[in-house]
Length: 308
Image 1 (cartoon, rainbow, N blue to C red):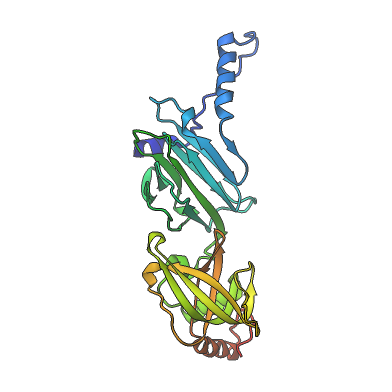
Image 2: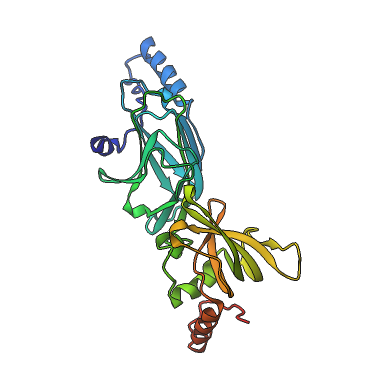
């Protein structure tokens, strides 16, 4: 397997016929036929700058092909039907900026099976998503400098019902990750709280109304009642039925954090990942007020926000 990873660099899985040598005359009919057949095999794969979809049935059963997949987008998906052989998924941003400092997050499709997903660097493999990891895969994040994605099909008696797939997101640096994905259960430092207020997709003041645990997805759903809406980029929070200037919504965190309903107001921050609101820093509002005012007095606030 590691040998396949080492030898995969630069292979495209499709071997196109060489162009004819000048003066050698037209290519033999056999080469023309081979070009047509290989062209037809390539047509069974579809991709754009953001997403790729392909089928392992284009591989000969006795060969372990390694396909190269190139995606140039901030977000998209990979879907591999009837997986056989392996894929190398090359992810890059859709700009000319350097890849240094980029973070990649992947989220397996529900029911994804038939292959293991690895982080690969110079032939060394680290398992990210095992084959058949469950109905709701956990989000996995890594720096693009740590390596790329290597997807290897697992031996199957019957591949007819196997589909491996995942969504991905690329972010600059660790923007959007914060403790929610890097260390989700530890409290944020004062500096992290102040930065989260400025950079999060949503910032609200509110209380926890209820918590629903979802063991099969290793997630907890936190139902919030919001009294002050500072910012939201997506419609995570909507007006409460009773009105009175309140909103309601839900955010996600990991089950292992053991979140429970409680009294008091908190400042909830976080980011949108794969269409869902992921909880970031969430200090008690009184603690946030103290932190903010102390930083304000020293002129260290990265941005301004109401604390009343």
